[in-house]
Amino acid sequence: MVATSAGLGALLLIESFSLYHYSSKMKRDVQRFLDAIKNEDTSLVFKKNSKDTFLQNLHEGFNEIISDFKLIRKEKEIENHFFQYTVQHISIGLLAIDWSGKVKLINSALKTLFQLNHLSEIRDLSKIHKDLPDLLHSLQNEEEGTLKILINGELKPVSIRAGKFRLGKEEMKIFSFHDISKQVNRSEVEAWQKLIRILRHEIINSISPIKISSVSMLRLVEEHLQKGNHEFSGESLENLQTGLQTIHKRSSGLSDFVETYRSLTKIPDPRLQQIEVKEIFTDVYHLYKQVLVSEKIEFDYTVEPETLNLITDEKLLQQVLVNLVKNAIEALKTNSFKELNLEAYKKDQVVVIKITDNGRGMSPEEMEQAFVPFYTTKEQGSGIGLSLSRQLVQKLNGRMQLQSEKGKYTTATLQF
Image 1: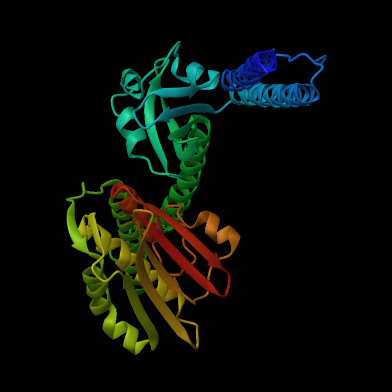
Image 2: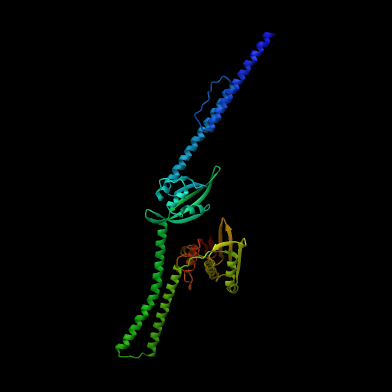
């Protein structure tokens, strides 16, 4: 009994030690595996020649997981390399920052554009332009801004577009920078060419009848003097009167044209104040109420919410709306059913104002010329309404767009 009890006790101790050793080994293997996954260590390999079937299967499972993890990591590295190559290859400058303003990504195009070697904080961009950091902070998602920046001694317009995205738990902002000086220069040259053509056309149209009339009048006077006649007959006086009237009329027309041109070049600085959009809509309605009734135009305006406010210059904005409503009324003249709508609402912190009519609309060719000064399709039009309106909107830090379809509708959209 003593020998049996002692033997069983010894066996129990040996079995307990073996179980502890087995458990410890399995625990160490699991811990090694977890540490490898945590530290992204794909070099760890577990032995496969274990006599224990359970350990053999466990080690094979660990190796398969590590192998799959290694493959996923390799694929991620390839994707990251492709992403880095793409970001560095594109010609548009890119900058990504976190919400504290620390730079997370900057590509070579942006470094080249701003002549940068290194950039760690967004506030460091104040060396490029003092207003650049504030502009980047103020831009909302999918919003664009433009800033003229001195680059290599040349003042260039740079278009900046903002975006937001989430990287894991961290929110980021990304900006694209594009030097648009070529596009702007091309547009400016085209605009000047169009303006010069219009000025030339208007001036020649005015000068030609003045020249013809003055030559005819001089010839008439010379003929009388050569004949020794110092008195004019009724017919001669009538011809002189007609010529003088022509000269006066065309001179006045040329003078009016010059004054109209001056109105495009002298726009007062805005005096900003908070206004209610509904009030300005009401003022415009009362201004045109009699015309709307006499022309039988169905007029309606909506403001959502009714207390929608806007910080702007009330007089300049009212002038814009007056111009656009006047254009809409003229576009409705040939319609049997006439409809004119004004609406205002807020979308993504942007106040949107729309003026829509179901008038004659515009063709793509007319749309292209719509904002060119002095271009008009109306017999009595000056051709400065839309051009002046857009300049006023830009002066108020807004944007103006036109949408139209020939014979169906026209919508002018203002965004502030």
